[in-house]
Image (cartoon, rainbow, N blue to C red; front, top):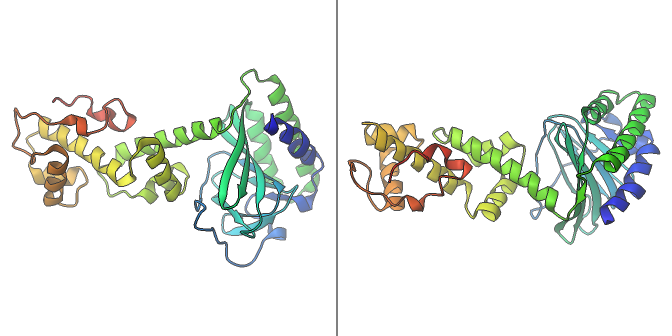
Length: 315
């Protein structure tokens, strides 16, 4: 129950004892803004993420740099960063030789939040525990009010007291509260992956890149590529190509269009590239192929979200 103890002994008391010098609100806190470049080490995923719901980051040990919008700030133990809706943000080391620990309070939806305890040390990221908590819309409203009242400390202090009470009560009252190492991280990762696959499926005929998909779901391109490799054993480019091939195969089977028309409609740069890739995957060139049987098992299963549109294909 390490995470529960950290919440009880570190997060909640300090929320109630917070002072102006310990709280960074939104991306317009001029008093603590730092000068100089914000550098993310090569071994860290250069997150430049944003979320449609607000988020909290609480520093437990060590120091870290937190970038919000165009500016960055140094967080030390006891400091709290409140990140508003759709604000681009990422974190980094102050000193590569110094580790740090943070607690993230991340909104999954207006009814659920995840409290995560993360350590960054020896050039590695370790998530020691995650806690799912059911909440009400009041929590979201409190965070929004906190960002809005950045220059009125009395109001901010009152909001922090309310937030600590909401977190404490939610943990006590929610029957489905569970603490499982890495469970929440995997669930959030799966949700973002589903969004990415759906986006690729809808936009595969357009000139899209990994950066476009990453921006759409609010993750960094490097992190998204890593998730695709680890969870699905593929890459963005390979996924995109297979998605385009599934659409092309459907058009070839159901329409009298020429190779050139199908190639451009499915997002290939030219008919020659389409023919080359088609033959590589199916062992046969594109049309005419009426009555021929294609090895569809080379494509991912039609039950996966990426290829819902290809369920009607006939072998």
